[in-house]
Every structure is written in C-alpha cells, then in structure tokens.
Image (cartoon, rainbow, N blue to C red; front, side):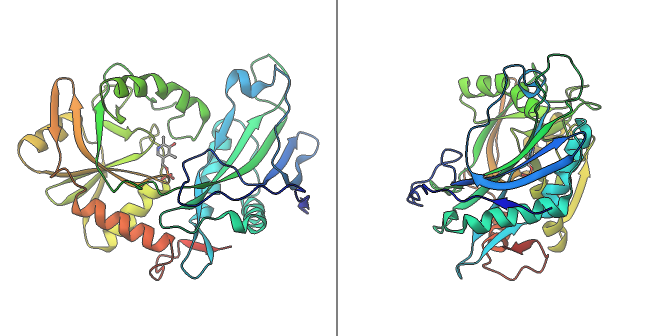
Length: 353
Ligand SMILES: *Cc1c(COP(=O)(O)O)cnc(C)c1O
C-alpha cells in the first residue's frame, strides 16, 4: 500500500524542549488509515493533524471498542532518532485488536508508516536530556450504530507528542495505596489488553488514592484480592532477599515491554529473577522482617518508578531510605542509556528512523 502524504501549509512553532509536559502538545501531522469489510485496511495517509468528525452514535463512544499503544522515539547525542522495541508494540497492538474483535493490520506496514511519519516530524523530536517523542497509535470503532456488536468500520491513527523529562525534579520514590474496594481487571476479562475501558475503570480508585495523599493505586487480583497485579498503569517489581520478583502474567496483567526489558537485563546481570504470584501479605511480611529491599514500577512513560511508601489498610510501610534503591537506579540508567544511544545496544532493542 502506498502512503499518501499531504504536508501542512501552516507548520506550528516547536516548543522549548526544556518546558515540555506530557500529552499537551501535538506535532503537525498524523497517520490515518481506515477499515471497511469490503476494502480491509485501506487509504493509508499522512496528513495535517485534524479533528475526527463523528456521528454522535459512533460505536466507540458508547461501547468503548478502542485500543491503543504507547512508545517513544529518542534523539541521540549524535542527532540520530531511534525507537525502542517498536515491533513489540505493534505485535501487542494486534493482540489487543484480536481481543476486542477489531480486524488485525499488517505489523510491518504499520511500523513502516510510523517511521515515515516520524521522518516527516524529525524536527519535533526534542533533544534536551530526558525528553522524547511520545507515540500514540490508536484504533477506534467507527460505525454510526447503537446496537451492541463489533463495528464493521474502524479508524487507525497515530499521533505524536514531544514530551518532557519524566524526572525533571529528580528520580524520587512515589507513595502507593493498596485498594481493597476496587479491582482493575479479572482473569478472562481484558486486563491484559491495552484498551480504553481499563483506564476509565481505574479512575475512581486513583482519585481515592490521591485524596489520601498517595500517587498511585496498587491493584490486587480481582478474584481473591490477595495477589499483587500492577501499580497504576505500570507493572510492578519487588526485590526481596536479593531476588527480583514480578507477578506472573495470568491474563489480567498487561504484558509490559518495559517489564520484559527489566527481566531480560536483570537476568543478564546474573540476578535471580522470578515471575510468580506474590501476595500482599508476603510483601508486608518481607517488610516487617527486613527482607524487602525495593519496590518499583515499570512502564514506557516513567521507565522505572521507585516506590518509597506503601499503605495497606492501616499499615504503612517505608521501603528503602527515601531515595531510589540501587536496582531501580541501575535499571533506569541501563534502559535509558540504550534508548538514548549512550551505550552500545547489545540487546538489539533500538531501531534507527
Ligand atoms: C501500557 C501499560 C503498562 C506498561 O507497558 P509498557 O509496554 O512497559 O509501557 C502496564 N500496565 C498497564 C495497565 C498499561 O496499560
């Protein structure tokens, strides 16, 4: 398929890369592609970023048939632009599509389209330390219809945002709150799918955590409310007795690409790594017996997010000294050094645009 390219006649000024936030500024162009039963995925195009006009009955607005991805492009010191494990994102995007009855797309073509788009927006990739270009591929159901079924038409789009350094104020630990009243997902549901509804379902507990002075929610499993699943919209890791432990992928946990990268690096460093179920009681016990060394989250936005305090009912535990632990620190540096091309990428995780 040939990608039709229409360039904007009104390019916007680029923001000061020292003053960037997350998700507020968008580049000049977007990628669009449509699906219909007759034509399949068709009409791929890069064009000026514009609003999507839709009928009020458009299915995505009512039944949430929407999936998305999140990845980043980085500018290296030599001025090259590189993506981090982008094939993994498009692979997961197709897995999400299958789970929500959305027709799959050609992964190779989608990656090619993304590279074309970034190539056109090269100058939008910020260069200050810790900044990047955040990439949001999305697919939404487009039928104007109020009946409940899978849509027959879809829109695939990619939008881009220059984003600031996540840790502009330092790599500081966050406080997390274990919720007992809410669950994020259940096995057999869509917890392992990057779909819009999971986020809508997480908001209420998130607000409650904020009211109590906590940054993120630590989710327990939806069946027994006993086993740890994720933190906010990140995967979670524990260091107990020098062993790196993360919840195994049971179907209700999002298979994070950062999670996978953390496991692969830790194994390479010779750390003992284990994916298994870990109960909140075990975490509390490890803390009281002095064996809990670190807790940190992993995800594309923050890469690594150290946890300094955890509250479970009326029990509050402190983890570490108030600063990020040594494993969190080493992991953050190792991953970002690869992303920004500061060290040789022996893992084969980066792709130059
Ligand atoms: C995207 C996401 C993650 C992290 O995945 P990465 O591929 O590492 O960015 C973790 N949990 C949830 C719920 C997510 O949506």
